[in-house]
Amino acid sequence: MQPRLKVYNISKYIGSLPVLEHVSFEVFPGEVVGLVGRSGAGKSLLASIITGLSMPDTGTMIFEGRKVQWPFHAQKLGVEAIHQRPRLAEHLDITANIFLGRELRIPILGRRLNILDRRRMNNEAARILEQLNFRFPSLREKVANLSSEQRQMLSIAQVMTHTAKLIVVDEPTGLLSYHQQKKLLALIRQWQDEGVSIIFCSKDLEHLFAVTDRVIALRHGRKVASHRTDEVSREEIVAALVGTTNRQQLTPAIWALDNYYRAREQAENLRHQQRLLEQNLAVQDTRIRSLIEQMTEQVKALDQANIALQDAHRRLLTEREQERKHLARELHDQLIQDLLSVNYQLEESEAHADVGPELKEDLLQIRNTIRMFVSDLRRICSDLRPPTIDSLGLGSALQSYTQDWSERTGIDLTLNLDSNLGRLPEAIELSIFRIVQEGLNNVRKHAMANRIDVTLEHTSVRALMISISDDGSGLQDDFDLSALSREGHFGLLGISERVALLGGRLDMKNKPEGGLLLQAEIPHPRVDLPVKMAEER
Image 1: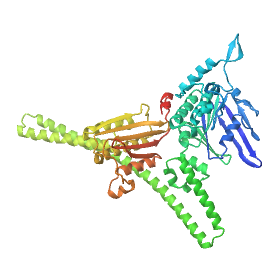
Image 2 (image 1 turned 135 degrees about the vertical axis):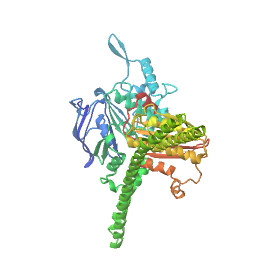
Image 3 (image 1 turned 90 degrees about the horizontal axis):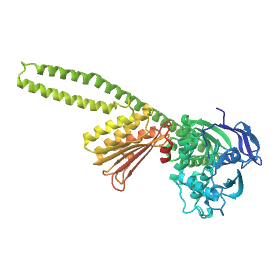
Image 4 (image 1 turned 180 degrees about the vertical axis):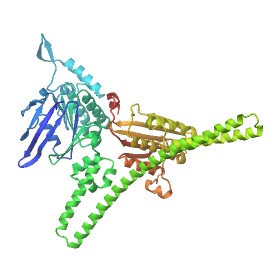
């Protein structure tokens, strides 16, 4: 397959200062390429060059096999753009802005007169806005009276008036609510399914990892990284953005922050502090310099110890699961089979006519006891290793476990599984099963709940949300997760550690109506969702 767009050695200078330097990449039909970079990295300038709004000082762009000469008319090539700040005519109404520069005119005898077909434009505008699930009281409303989000939705509607070959999406989510951001991400997936090429400029790694096939990182106007999205981690992308090439130099606390923006701010503060220290070193004596060097070495050693501890913890969990699997197999294949064999022998002995009534009663009690042992051992095997997870997957294992758990505890439990759950890597499926298992055990021991709802649903093609909601006592006001280990409570702490090792996020909060809501979002390899389902996400 030939690329739809080729960009070679694009450079742009302001005076002698390079803003873009020798940027090259390709975009194929139906591919979503993400451009990520800090403010001033050159993303928006590169987007404006690709859409013909700016001219590079050097470089070449080839679109569908033909060399493009600047300036050019992007729409005639089939290139559309959604800008960070909407480009609208303030004095025109909603319909006129949606069809700005592409007005529909009345045809007569095969020719289009210079008369606007206002009725058809209104109908098309209403259809597009309905598709976006975005409504206005009147299409006659002037754009000057609209909010920032409404204007951004109009700029998205502009792209949908014609079939595009390439759409450049330049950081529009800053003006959109959470719901509309999800709608835009669903639209990008829909456009991709229709064979449209997408260039998605964004600072939000969650958005990029949700929809892109490839991520290109820019720093100081240069392309510093290009990875297949399924083959790169958020840690590697952030490392490229902040200019760190050695993984061991990245402070593990960065990856525990709730979002990328906080991580970026933290990195900038560290860089600022480093510059201040370097300036102070020039005027300070040898003793202070030696102390700072020692501090730096200690921080590096601590970082390496933290990384080693995480790796050791992962190996410990893996080995523990293997031991559980081995023990469950031995119990099932040896001890349970031996007990069943003894039970059959007792049954044959009981059937003999010369066995007295009292002995038969004793044999019956022994057989019933053996059945209880077998039942308990099977439940222990199930706890050690869910029997259906290897052959039928996570969904079947959870259905079997939660049904048995509800019957044993008498607590009403509802399990809601994403209809497109699919199969995940073994380590992730086992970890998710253990998170649910530990969460339910914690509810049974401490919550005094009568009802539990367990839900697994995709929040994106690369993330799964686990929700455990109960109607119990909830968390105390002075709840401290770090203090649980000192008190001998390891349920919630174990869940927290598993989620952290998977690179996920954990949130626990009391519900207004009573009880606790535990939510863990776990990243995983890409799962293709139907377009309609992705829109609902």
